Image (tube, rainbow, N blue to C red; front, top):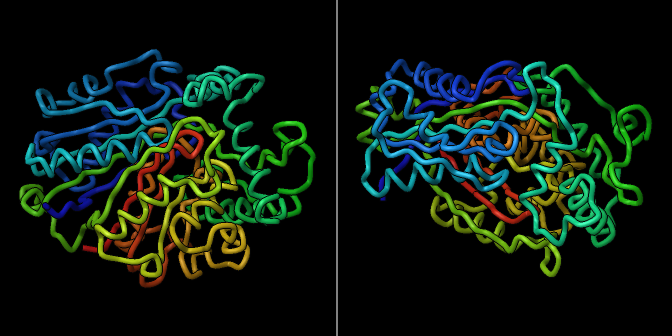
Length: 400
């Protein structure tokens, strides 16, 4: 198979896009990532764009057609991708597959989400309803905020099954807020929390569902934002005028989907996620111990713990301990979510999986923000999730 490289990455600041329209978001994403390497969009052969709430919140479909309006992309093989919160990762796989099929040797991946209005305000009930569509119908019944409720149940199960304390998971949020302070693109870059604040029920920090342990600081953010990658084969790099030494290779990738219904399966050890990560490692010819940089899908703190386990950095049930022992810190055994993760960087759903790859690209290129750069980054991995740990996209990235 062709080797696939990340030639360029660009993202907006995560948080609020205010009055920017969907066509403007997509046009900016394409033009700005092209600007990173000084090319025109006409040099891109294929494309894919990922978003989840574009119809329910933005009343806009056929995003591929909007991408084709960018001069140079008209008439190209472009598709829109939706796989819940794994839409961005799935869009990257879509472009990789097009390149592997020989449809071209360069491609663009765009992911975005606009979840707030032109004034930066959000409609919590509308967003909760829109996100709830990505769950099993019968498991929505009786839940006001469906996904926080589902993950509050997962969190309770994790705590009880593995005898983990709430403060152990809260420590994940504390570390990610600390990372975000150094990330100029992070939504919560101006906020810092202590473990005491993360645990104390006062002000904005409250239990989301009565009787369940999920608190405000355990949750990811409602976020606007976009991110874009340019991918290429070796031949494509020559066409783009980009040296291989300035790139990172997506050396392994896999996708797996577990049943949407949470009930009746082991969500603490999601079979598809573990399978996809294992397959990505095998394709890349690496083992979990080779990875020292990673971005995992911490939509809630319990997923930061489970993510460490899916990576193979911790045994099942030991993920929270991995974080608490400092092994996931920037200077730890494997720096996880140096970006601040979804909890502090922000979670613009369609952009999330793209930004994970982009953060790893920066790390491997030595271009991470000061205070976040890992010393001697060797191999990076990503774990992007859609739904109640349902759709999983995993990748392994190496310095080229």
